[in-house]
Length: 245
Image 1: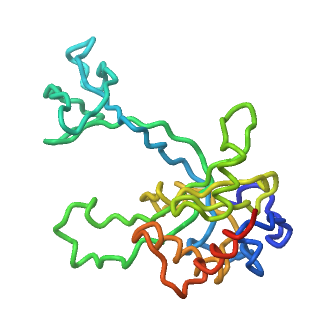
Image 2 (image 1 turned 90 degrees about the vertical axis):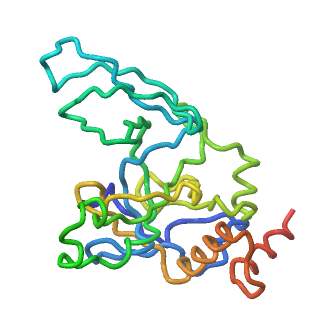
Image 3 (image 1 turned 90 degrees about the horizontal axis):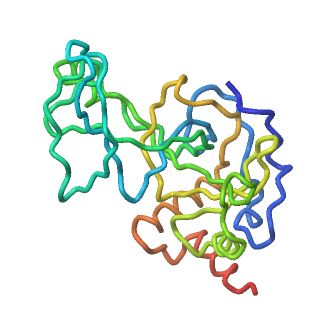
């Protein structure tokens, strides 16, 4: 399913101090089905808070009803976490050491960073639990940069610094979807697993082109290792942007 009415990628106009202004074409249209690295998709992902929350089961209104349970929302601290009572809940079974984490989730544009690696053959994993081999891809979420009355957005100075490649965890962009050409921020430090099943996401016909993917790979290296090779394309563009007022 295509999200919205896609615009031609070349219709996007980037500011002169954005890295995309140095690239011939950042987004391209790709109608081939399925997932690929660099594809734009949409899906619900959790917003990771500073203090995670858990559902602590505290008892039943009806002791004979194993489908219903009363819970209390509590903060989870890795050092001193609450000891959960051993109350069986048929609908939400828990095993030793497990808890029910609670996160807010929102539908966001996502960039596919990796489609998930090599599939494990059934005969190799036939005696293993399913969770060990269920596929997962890696995605990074986009956040709207502007203010719209419903979200705080990013400050103008913050966006300017992101646009000029000051931070390895942020990448400035504009999304090639109708009504989505405002400024967006890709948060590479929010990289996370996501199910690669068609009911979990909405497909889009837009992908980063080959040059953009090369820059993205260097950006990820910068985030993970903290440095860039001297001959990197991203490093060359950053040096050029640093000279701007």
